Amino acid sequence: MKRLQHRLHTIIYEADTSAGKLFDVLLLITILLSVFFVSLESIESINNVYSEYLNIAEWVVTILFSIEYLLRIICVRRPLSYIFSFYGIIDFVSIVPKYLSLIIIGTNSLVALKALRLLRVFRILKLAPYIGESNALLKALKASGRKIFVFLFSVVILCVIFGTLMYLIESEKSGFTSIPISIYWCIVTLTTVGYGDIAPLSPFGQFLASIIMVLGYGIIAVPTGIVTAEMTKKTNVDLNTQSCPYCMNSDHKEDAIYCHECGKILNDEK
Image 1 (tube, rainbow, N blue to C red):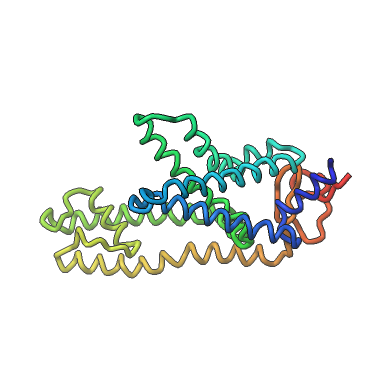
Image 2: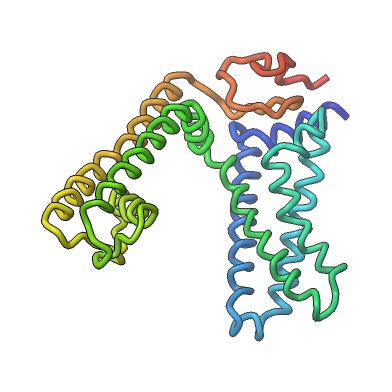
């Protein structure tokens, strides 16, 4: 039984083997097809003609995902670690609406059913674990979280200061009727979005707006540099896709024997 669990775990959770890569590719195709079917259902002209075929296709996909969900539970030594993990919850949320559609029947429930069907789009979040670099990006974002928070807090302070200054400089005719509105304008300008619904008319206001616009370009580059620096640190260590069958932790060193999170052996076939 443990050997079967180990074999399934290697195929489902790891992408270093040929079987694991094939499984990931097939799963990626199935996820994309599922999202494609959901998209087609939202087009009324297509749904009116092909609703029956789309329903059959969706049931096939749902059954496949259900089998995958059960296999993921079976092949880990601590099933609850997967069930209550982020991707375990996403997997469950992505398949349950189709089964609920068998229970929720009646015209009064159609609105709720439509909302539940939209939850199937969450399957696209399952793509992340199968794109190798996404894990490195997530870890880099997590490692640089504090720096980015301090940076964003500083940006908020700048927006409050510049927004207040613009409220003092411009008149209500320009659209700057309050400090919150002025701060909103500053955020839109600083992020280089520029809706154009509010614009300064006085020369000094336009000069201050120009400074904010130039600052915006520099501000956009800062978080990118922070995350890039963290990603560079992460790529210096050779990692593989081995996933611990006990705690589900992944990205262990290439020659790792034990999990660096829970200490359990990684390739326990016995």
